[in-house]
Length: 302
RNA sequence: CCAGCGGUGACCGAACGGUUAGGUGACAGUCUGUAAAACUGUUUUGAGCAGGUUCGACUCCUGCCCGCUGGA
Image (cartoon, rainbow, N blue to C red):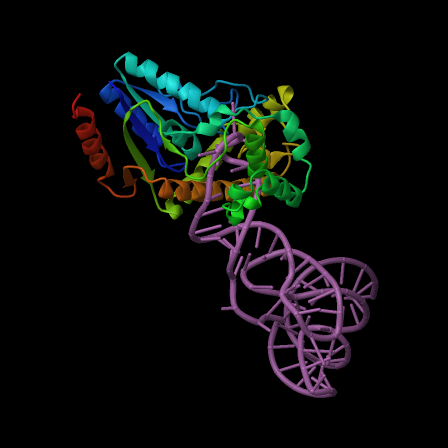
């Protein structure tokens, strides 16, 4: 068994439900690819599901004040995948964090280069044009290939400088290549019109508030600070600086907008990182379609 | 009824007698250890209405309409 099923898609498209159904049918185990659900104690705000009888891996693995990143995710996910496969079960990756999913599919040579927090401490307080100059001097060739978006992104420039200074590897554009695990991957991405997604997001926000989101935040703040990495998350960060008691309408509206924008960014991501199948969940027969695709793939030279 | 202040593009909101405000949102993107992050591009010269002054008015003047505040 070297099969790996991936279910991706923007928020509020029913990825987990689908994964649970498939897991039950094919004796599978679910691995989450969600950069926020890795945090313990952040349940309501991140919409964690706890389906009966099915365990979801890679959720609740670190505390909100701990740092985490794709490279760590990749390692954990790849180990889990092999573990599950060795049990002769089907691993199913489910999530909306495109970068995390990509890290499982494609090998990233720069993942060996660890962040240099000492260096970052200094670079972090430099203005963008200085960072540009530094990177230009260090790595002129690659600097010139950067697009407008990346040249102005200090976070990414700093990482490039970090990589260059590590002296291990030079970052080349397009050096992404499939991982060497030889997985037989089926990647299905769910999609829907943005209007439908927005509707679902808005009702979901209301139910999260009713479910006690504000209390969850209060509890988190007893142990953690707003500046902790985990709290930099939609549904939480909008409430920074409020007393969490009086009129929160404005904050909720902003949260709503951020949530919509996030869904659009996810759509953009999955549009580009073309999966095998794009399934429009607003079509009535979408479940049958998925069943056919999965069955066919699953039974292929088993 | 009187007085004061104000009416700017989907929204908020400046400056200025002639030159792109800016922000938010929206739309489209970027993506190799923060990714629910960070960043990029685009968004018909718009000015409550009617006149006037001026070479030229969002900017000055007059009238009207609307809103807020204070007073009878």
